[in-house]
Each structure stands twice: as structure tokens, then as C-alpha cells.
Image (cartoon, rainbow, N blue to C red; front, side):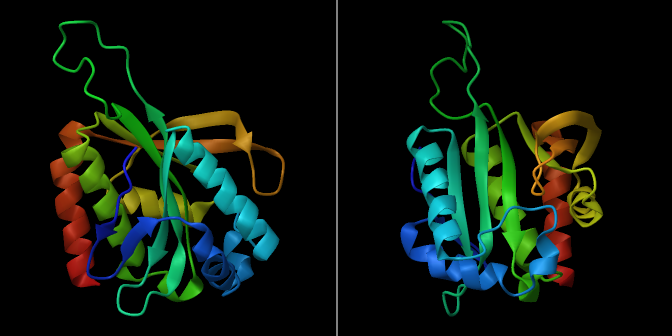
Length: 206
């Protein structure tokens, strides 16, 4: 998968690299109470492991991880990634056969520093990623999952237009190392124009 840099007015999403380790630790340290349901790196060793895992997924072509950076001064605000990339087995002769990009993906591992919460940062990051997914890759579906207990994250996904699909029981390991029930949301290609308009309006209001 190609290296992507997605640039907006409020955030720049740049490929996550080892040089971002210190910035991730500083961002996560802004208010540790925010991350009850989200795994974030708490020190340099955890940041190094976090980045190496993301880079191994990138090397395996299953994820595209980003550092979320403030454009005017380069401060790291958090991280996010495309992952769980699906490439469907389209038959020979089908227009989608061999197109070389994902048919569906997930956006996840998203977290922000306290100063970026309730700003345009998260909304614009989602707009940049969804625009790339639906308009460059032309995916058919983008999924988002969150811990069922994470009411703030669930509300944020619903505000941007994610459609609730149900609960996946014991779906993944939670940040507190128990089997996590996940709330599953999705956005379809057909829903993207309305979601895009909603995101733009939210950024303008912010």
C-alpha cells in the first residue's frame, strides 16, 4: 500500500514512523483518563512497540497507520489507521477484478490528545480518510468498531453518520484485557455523499 499524506486545514495525517514515538507519548499523557477503552502508548517503550506493530501491519499490506499532526507546528495530536483491509475475490471478467485496492476497510485505533478533543481535528481526520477510501480506493464499505462501554466514541461515530449494525460479542481484547463486546458501525458507498456533507458542515461550525 502506498504512503499516504492526507492534508486538511486542522490536521495532517502523515505515515506513522518511529520518529513520532515521543509525540505519541506526549499526546497520550495529556489526560490518561481519556483512554479507559483505547490502548495508547504510555511511555517510550510502549510507543516503540505500538509503532513497530503498526509498521508490521503496513508491511503485510493490511493497514495504513497515521500520525495525526497539527499542520502549523507539527505537534502530534494522536494516531489513527486504515486497517482490516478486505480484497474480495472478484471473478475474471468482472470490472473489479485485479483493481489492486481494498474493496472494504475499517478505520480504527483512533485517539486524540485532550486539547484536540471536541475540536475539528477528529471530524477533519475522518473526512480526509473517508474521502480517500470512497473516492480514491472506491471502497464499498467502511467499518468502525468501538468498545460497547465507550459511550463517547459511539456518540462520535453516530454524529458523523455511521450506521449501527449491532453488537459483536467477545469480539476483541479490550484495553483492560478482557474479551470486548464491540459496537459495530458502517458507512456504505451509497451513503457517502450525505456523510461527506455532514462532516463538512460540522467542520464549518467548529
